[in-house]
Image 1 (cartoon, helix red, strand yellow):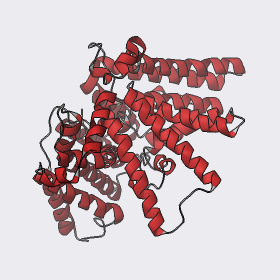
Image 2: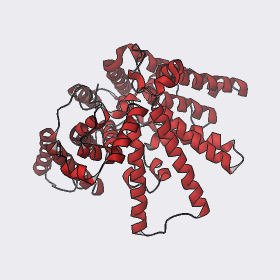
Image 3: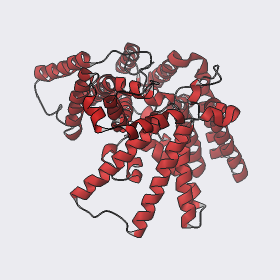
Image 4: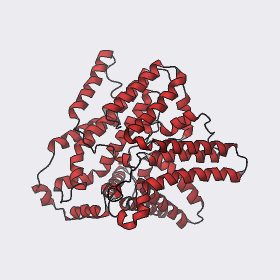
Length: 468
């Protein structure tokens, strides 16, 4: 079930209506039911995975908390980690282990083992569930005794498929809290949903033909399409993923549950390290807390800590999928992050000032575009093909080439302007008309504009991060 579908709109409307009319004590039942219905509509046969991951960590969390012997606590912690990573390894990396390097260079899960099914959202809900158990072991989280609330924490439908990856200490208390109707909150959630739909249905859908020509076609792309797709690759992924996050946070806000921010203006990052502090922040924080910090703590030398950073980025790349393009994507980010750290330590940095800051941002955006070209390519061979086209590109090729999809490009540019206006003036909609009629006229006008500009959706219109 896609967030930008009528089926999801109906599900969200039913949940919201139930919150208005049903007693407070029944709300967790509504949310658990909606969450499993949401997942079952996409992969009914794999609903047991949610139950298995949740059941394992529910039992392990209670056992860790109540056990007095450290050896027993460690055993249950290892059971949780092994079980969750085992699910990931079997469903996401089995092909890598079976077919080896030939598979890695072939292009992902579509090249071999046709019976292989990748459970949607498995990389997200296993990390979230496993992080809970680790926090209980560290004494940072009291285990949830109510199985209903815990299974809801693991499967909460707005953030089930692609995050944000929530900590139990942030989400569980909200799932238990009473939420009286708040019109301001509902209006804010609705505007977030509109923002997400604008990004997905207008900006991303309008740019998709350019990316399809470059990353799905076998022949050389139109020079203009090639330039647009490669230079906007990072922005394209950002618009798609942040659009999903807006829809998730907006849907959750309607019923009074606030999800974490996942982005903080990543296009303005001045370095690769700064980029990862702004991009997919809940994953970055999870990786840092549960992998990088313990790994770096084992290192006694500066070189060892650099190695820990590099290995962490390899894991980030591998988390995205069992393809050499993702592994190399992580390795490149890790290499640049280490080099940046070395340069800062040695004092080899650009001077301060707005012009130099703009150059830092431009440099980071350039590296992001280069790395995201690799990220979007189905195979290493295809990525090399795209890079060769870029190196062979000449100015006269661009001047002589026809501009494809002109209307789509104009719509994407206009919608991006609307997004940026709201981004830099977040109160522009709430501070405008004060009266009920003018305000609702504005809202309905925005919905009408969204419908007018929305592009036709095809079979492959799922969010990019649904595949992870």
